Image (tube, rainbow, N blue to C red; front, side, top):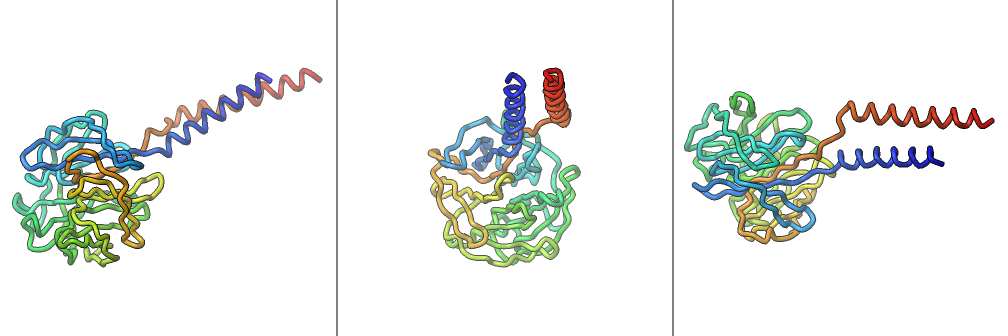
Length: 282
C-alpha cells in the first residue's frame, strides 16, 4: 500500500513538472517618448496588467524573446537592443543596430525572433523616417543588420512569429489594421485581411498553445488574433492607460536534466522495491 502511495506521488510530481514546462507568461512594455518604459506581466484571459518594474530605458518601441530565457526590446530613439530582466524589469542597453539604410533618424522599430531558426528580424517604419518599411535580419550579439527587402506596406509597428516560423506584421497606415504575411527571403508582405483594429503596436504567439495576441494602443486593451482569418477579438482592458507597445512570451522554467534523471531513477527504485517485497512474501 505504501509503495502504491509513493508511486502515485512520484507520478504526480512528474505530471507537475510537465505542466510547469508547458506554462508561459506574456510580458509587455509601454512606450512614452522621453520617459523610461515600464515592464508588466499580462493576463491573457482578462487583459489585466501587473507592474513589474521600470526598465530604466526610454522609448522602448517593441519586444520579442527567444521564448525561454531572454527578452529583447528595441530603443527606437537610438537603435539599441535592450535586454530586459523579466523578474525586475531592468533593461541593459546594447548593442547598437547598424546596417545599410539605418541611422538615428531611420531606426529599427519592430523586432521578432524566429522560433525555428533562432534568427532575429526587425523592420524600419515609414512613419518613423524611412522611405519605406524594410525588413532586416539582426545579429543580437553584434547588432549587425542585413537588409532583406521592402515589405510593401507602411507603418508596420507590429512584428511577430508564429510557432510554425511564419512572420506576421500589422500595418497601421489606416484604420483597418491589415495583417501581412512577410516573406523572409524577399521581405515582401502579402495582405491576409483587415483586423479592423487601429493602433496594433505588437503581436506575439504563445509557445505553449500557438495562440496569437495583439496589443492595441487606442483603447489600451489586449486582443486575441486569428492569423488565418485576420480576425481580432478584444479580451479585455489593461485597466490602465499604459501604452503597451511591446509583447513577448517566456516559457516557465523546465526541469533540469539532472532532476529528470533523479526522478526517473527514483521511479525505478520504487518499482524494484515493490518487486522485492512481492517476492519475499511468496
